[in-house]
Image (cartoon, rainbow, N blue to C red; front, side, top):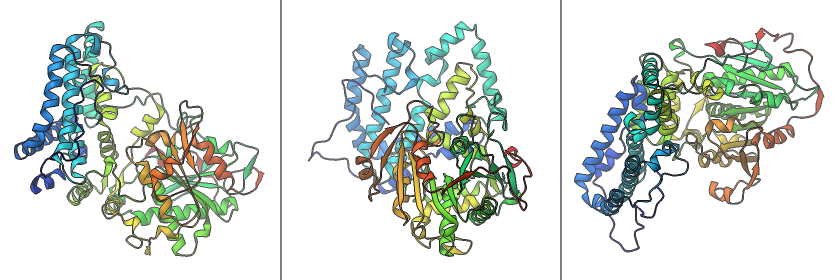
Length: 584
């Protein structure tokens, strides 16, 4: 939580020797491990129900701490009181951070009442942050409480209420109340069709196979788990060694094949890379027993088909997020069998293998919350995509929840029509066994401990991976923090290249070079510390795609004439891309 800019600081740097707040009682430390969890809101349809419970729970816990530990509150109150006095006298210079778009309307600065409201909110927000610091909670307890306060603080922002939002009031008058009617209709529609969460995107302009997932190709293999798509070359010559793309199971694959001009598949094909891609089946309760064994075996099957069709003895492998984890498990399994030579190189982007992360997604990864999360899949055998989507949205509530609350309901506008948001809304399900196995992996950090996990009967040891590995991460990624992604370079044994992109989780994947403002950091060395790596890294303007394709081309063999037909006698084309499973 950032501190607003202004002359009067709301927190003090405690000089050495100053008496610190006494430790918080053990029972409250234990409670701090279980503050309101954003996933709770995902388990019940309806934003307001989850919001009320989470906000009330946070404030109730904070009140308990204040009563048992008043010294921290007393340390916080003087600065807050002085700033509130300045606000009342009209002398405060507090202002929101430059990146805070909530208060962009000029009325927040020009209208005395709105300005006072904004500054009071900023004062209490910063004071809450200082209060958590003064509590002296150990370990992750402070971060968990701080995030619970973030949920409550963001929910209570004046911009979220019609009569406290000048832009909403003005639009209401300008439209003669039409925006209010439209906002109520939007909210009703979301309650009925979107589980009570504000819609992030207008999907109507987008159609799969036409302006999304539109790269030409054909399904050349299908079983109950996946379809394998071979894409039509878009150059006269191609490299002899193909790449197999392993998408995450938590979303459909076409973030990698977005709108023409923004498609990674298209970008590779135009540069002579032969592309094959997996499209996972969207499972139902009937597939509840699918797990990592299922997906690793499917990846091995796909590798073998690609080798037979292309004639190449090995392939380059690429996986993102959970797909990167699946690719790494596949490599480790093959290495344990002495068959890693099927893979020439591996690329993993926004992928966590070491789950000892300080990212928000793992703040509430305690044994009790993980056990509770497992119960979600027991009745149906799957966890629905909307539940996963809600959880990720609550990790960044201002950007992914309240932004659309204001736009859709208070301003009465349609959500934006944007291709990456249309993809994000096209959710998939995770099976019970896969979900449980993933939670156990997180809780026990299994991939960081050789032999702690078995796949297809083989103990997994990532240090057995000796192929060249390329790891890409996002500087502002809130789901897979880049410092934790960097640890992959220390876990595998082969030569590694780490690249840090100047963007977040999804923007790291969709980084077409035409997009302005992109940049990436490169350091050929991989020291033990991520921070040490960054100190010696050099920033380059543009997309990491350019750097990666050059790296990939060096590992793709010689060039020859592009194949004139897709598939082979044994694996003929079955239907045009994007296949069938993408529509499930």
